[in-house]
Image (cartoon, one colour):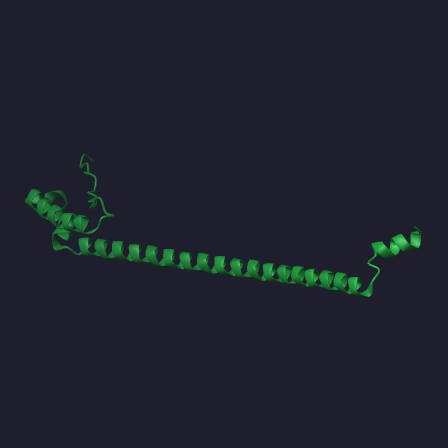
Length: 136
């Protein structure tokens, strides 16, 4: 066998074989190109969807926190506007019926605690001024 005969056999000697080879290479190259383009679009779409989901979740979280804070403010406003609580805070130690008043306040505050599962207790602080020494 001559070298020429072997090389023509290896390089698809007929015109029809060359067309099949070119068609196959172009076909697979175009499929590969479409896959790369589709992958880039998919990655971009997934990234955009992830950002949108995170944004939506953060907006919902902010809304829930704002609603929670507004609810707590309404409860604190209701407690402070209660006339017995106001009397208790203003009277200091001079109040004669303090036990009866405290019991009534505790009963009303227990309704807030029962209505809201996230509240375990309500604390009312009464700051009394320190006793003054008149020894001068």
